[in-house]
Image 1 (cartoon, protein in one colour):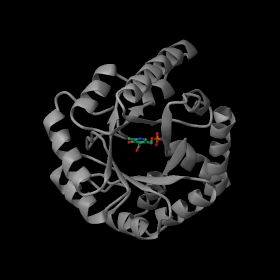
Image 2 (cartoon, rainbow, N blue to C red):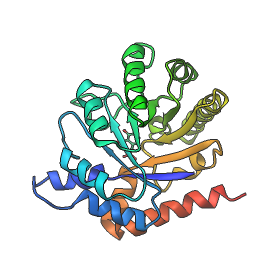
Image 3 (cartoon, helix red, strand yellow):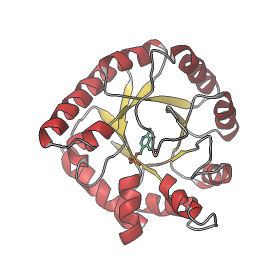
Image 4 (cartoon, rainbow, N blue to C red):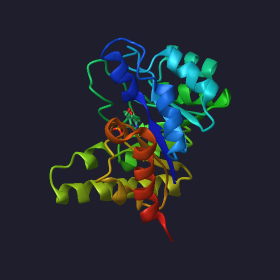
Length: 241
Ligand code: PXP
């Protein structure tokens, strides 16, 4: 199971003063030293944290796969084809949201997503769809040609009671199993932290975890390499045979 570390919020801190520090690419290097298997950034339409130059620098210097989260717009598809990240995760995007609020609406956006998947795939970029833990969305993702999905774990992470968390976990498990049954690669992410990771990491069919805010929050206090190392330890503890 791989861990891709999202460094968006290093850029959020920089943008708080519209200056040059801290540098997301430097955080990415430390994340890799701490054991990150990949780096993720979300290039938003409003460039509120990661900007085009961060993306270009990361593309040039990373020794691990770069995952670009983006909306399925023409502007972003062209940007991705020019930049050639190893992978693109298509996400829904609203200007007013604090963070990505939910998975893609695969049924209403089917044609647009299908077109984006094809163009990116033809350019040689792996594509993943960020979807809610819903069997219908998994089946629709498969039917429009997505080879991979990332299951949204935010509702699980935000569940107000252990009982609700258990119910959300069951939905995630069912969605992951359906994806794998259909031949899709299944990843998971959003809202994962040091307290809620192990139940998700224990789902053996999951190929990759995509974590940002939880790791960056700890990195501010103990350093990025240590923060990633601690997360990797929690993941490997539950993945031992
Ligand atoms: N996966 C996707 C598709 C996301 O949009 C985000 C947030 O950018 C994450 C994972 C990481 O979420 P978090 O920052 O809550 O760990």
